[in-house]
Amino acid sequence: QVQLVESGGGLVQAGGSLRLSCAASGRTFKTNRMGWFRQAPGKEREFVAAISWNDGYRYYADSVKGRFAISRDNAKTTVDLQMNSLKPEDTAVYYCAARTPLSNDYDYWGQGTQVTVSS
Image: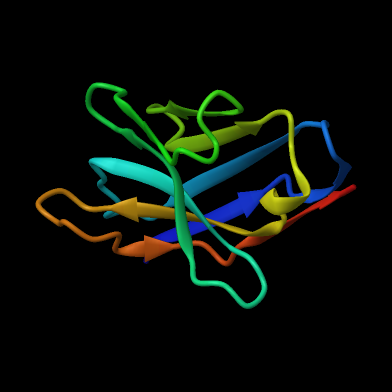
């Protein structure tokens, strides 16, 4: 059974930084892309960033470009999200997700970790 477990959320003041980490486990786990999404209260879930597992190509939402950086460790099957210059509007539950090869959708999701940015 595949599991994605996030860690690293918390409370930070505006302008501060946080680093989220996601560890994937499961004997059958294979992925071609992993990413981060977030959902703020009363809003729909939105894409934040993703990284291609094969070549490391990175994708970012316009709202986080230049402030967030996604990285991966193929050997450990982990993906991190370094978040800098945080803003109150970044407050949300952040979810890790993984896409299996040949899939166009994210097939596996973590349980989410809360990020709160105070003004």
